Length: 447
Image 1 (cartoon, rainbow, N blue to C red):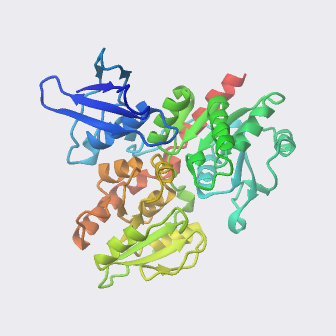
Image 2 (image 1 turned 90 degrees about the horizontal axis):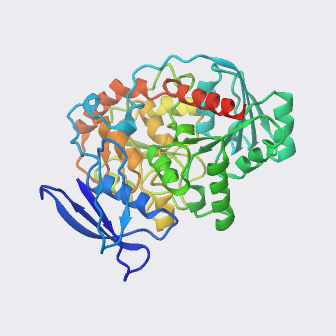
Image 3 (image 1 turned 90 degrees about the vertical axis):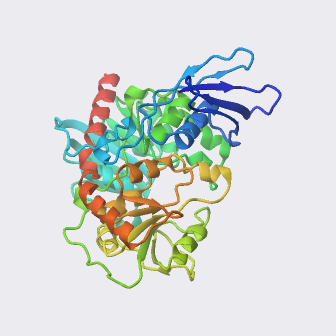
């Protein structure tokens, strides 16, 4: 497959021509492709478009080059393969780690002492800390806000400011050599980077989302600059999905050797030993956990599910407005929520049907709720939208489908059986070795 990318100089800067041709004339398509009006490298956008539109399964990243129309220069795209009928036969490089059945043996490094920093302590950071604590010497967490007064056995959590003097105090008291900063916002990574001038520490930046595209970003230019510094100047980077890693590789040329992808899978320590029994109701019951309202307007997707005769219960992170489309349930502790959700027939991941920036901020996300549904044994119904990560994982493992497609009780039950076969792979402990190795590499770099 050859991809010739031509720039039409008579058109808008963000308005170019993409021509896809095959040497044996098997496929010849010329498309006038507009890049969304946002700060994304055009090549990165085309890469995502090609993956989404031409093929869902590529052997490796697509290599794309912009050239002028008068001097067309073909750029080779790696061969496309077709999905095989069984998940274990699909050889997608970007999902290689996901399909590992057992954790790799790692050498515990008790000399690593970690200071985790986050504005509001979230589920992802807790999942990482739980899986990490047996592999390092010490973990200390500082956060301005800790929801529900969460405690983690063996880990000290402080509700405090995250300014330079506070971080420095904890670095000194706890002999810290790694500061692991979670976004959003990215400003705490900048504070940690400044501390490197005085302390022998490595700074790890953990990107949960593209924060500067959020509608509530306090100052676009400032937030954008913080993101750039955090990604370029941190010693190591952790991303929530492969599309996010590819995005930052294209935008900031981050060091791939010091960057990893770590999905927000639950820790085995968070999973209940016993799940609630199925509802076995005459209706199909779906469940949604997470934020409601604002830019998360899920009305269309909930309506589509309701039209199939299914019922929906919502467990909101924060308050939710009443609706005829769903029943609002009280917020539950994480382990209890995983236990409760097992009684439902499917989990729901809606799209974010608002402005271009808000929707595009989700294209690289791989949400907590996806892994939480799997942990509960649920098949997943998604409106993929731009969320390529969800589609890759759900469809390559045959554990769900799209909300708008045909599904019924029989298909949900078939997907549920597949979830039972693969869910043991999707726990943080099976992948935490990557984070430990990143710490080691970065610490050696400091020395």
